[in-house]
Image (cartoon, rainbow, N blue to C red; front, side, top):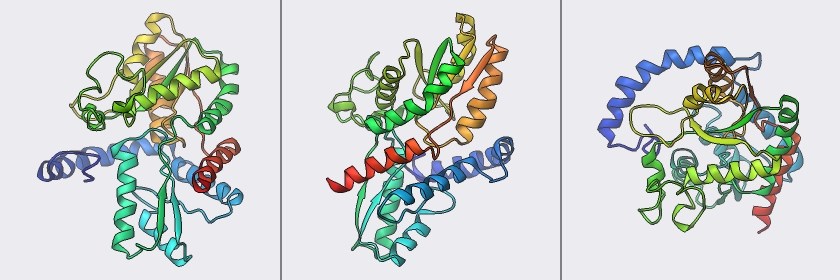
Length: 309
């Protein structure tokens, strides 16, 4: 029911969520989660817990984990902030590329709960989207490089989470640039500086340079509903690339800092099956950053640089 996620009038949103989304998806999603469940439970949760623990070891400050939805909640984390007597708080939305439905929604919720809980004396700062931060790009490249060298793919696919086109257009500061022409995302300008699609292309471009990748493609996954979503679509490429002679495909997912349903199940299982059925030989899902020491150091650098400035 978050209006930043489903940005339609309240009544229409309520009907969509309660009559269509929940009845249709709750059992289907449960089955999908069964496919990636581990002895430690949800990969997203335990990777995030591991990252929190390791980051706490290298930062001279307490670190708490919060999920925008689910547990541990933002509210429970803020209760720990209050109990610890914290007066200066840095919030780190773990979304490399900015979007209203993820980044902005998290920021709005933190501000709302701080206000509701009477924590207006806490000075709060938010780490901005880090799609172009050298430490983040270096971490992805360093972790991905051994997998790519060993696998030797015919092509690399950078698969980012999708967004409805209307979400992207709402971040267009000019109101006339985003998705108005082919190639609108190839260069970042003031009009599209908050454009998720443009930031995704930027991330892919600089990762490709760091990794020495010349043959790659950018696409977007996980679309829902009938409204237009940003293109190209990842699932279409899993069917078309084998027909173009691509037999070995490596997939990186730079919009996810932790492996989760969208990487492990959607790419690692469903996409691999789809790719092979279309004539491909092998698909490699390159692991996300998770709690790798390189990512812990990169995140520490981004946080401390932000605090010191």
